[in-house]
Structure formats: C-alpha cells, structure tokens
Length: 172
Image (cartoon, rainbow, N blue to C red; front, side, top):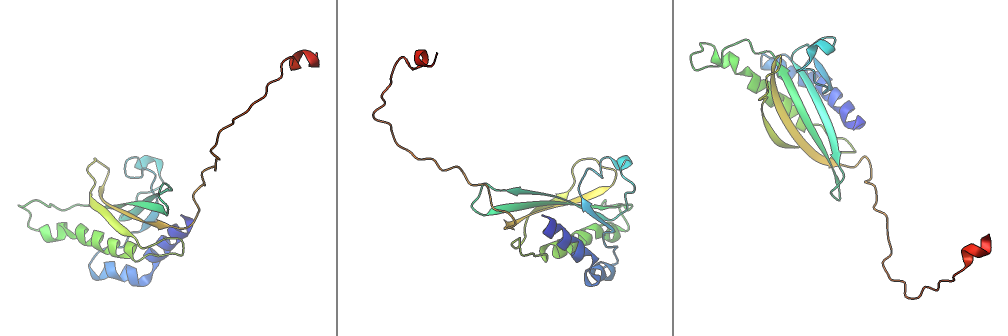
C-alpha cells in the first residue's frame, strides 16, 4: 500500500499532469492524503484546501490473487448554479472535467506491487458534506504481501486406542 500511495503522490505532483488541469482551466488537487473524514469533520483538521483528493485503501485476501480496493474522494468547491436556469451552467459543470482528468491520472499509476487499475464506479457524494465531493472507486491485483496460508491438516481415523486404568493412582 505504501508503494502505491507514494506513486499516487508522485503522479499528482508531476508537472505534465498538473498541466492537464491548467489547460482545462482548472486547479489540480492541492492536497492528496489518506481519507480520515476530512469532508465531514473539517474542524479536526488544520485546513481544508480545495480541490483535494483523499484515498482509502483495503486489501481482500480471499481470492487467489489479493485485490486492492481504492476509494477516492475528490473534493471541490461548487459556487455556481448547475440548474437548467443557470446562465453559466458550462462553468458550473467543470467539476466533471476535474473528475475525468483525475480518473485519467489515477488509471495511469502502476507499481511493481499492483496490477492495472479498473474503475468500478463513480458519482456524486450523496451524503451532505461541507463541500462537494465526487467519488471514484477502483480495484486491481495486489502482489505486495502473500495471503496467510491455511493450516494443513491430515485427515484420517484412529482405529485402536488402548486405555490403561489406574495411572492416576500410581502417580500419587
């Protein structure tokens, strides 16, 4: 996980990737961090700088090859009207461009411990938060750690058990 996280930081600090946002008239994510409820409890954190990208990771070892699941929260500030009455709906919907560029960068990340990322789902955060959030979920194979082996047991039966009585009395 550490290897992937470091690759994530490098990808979003890459000047070519930052330029993708700039060409679209957007700001690149300024903070990339592990998710810890920053959008629900901003008072517990130093600063909520937008746009921000937060990630939570978990590994499922139930399959033959472990699966790394990644959930990203892309936080952005939406100050424009997105309704059908809006005179600036094109600017208001630029967060979709922000999400598409972010998706492109995330899918380009590869390490020697992970396979290719597959986008599972994406969409707007349905829960009320202090800012708007776009959710992106991915999975890939994970080769960083072997799953714990099950204990091997031998099957069989015991046919003949001889029991001697009086052993307890003999010890006294």
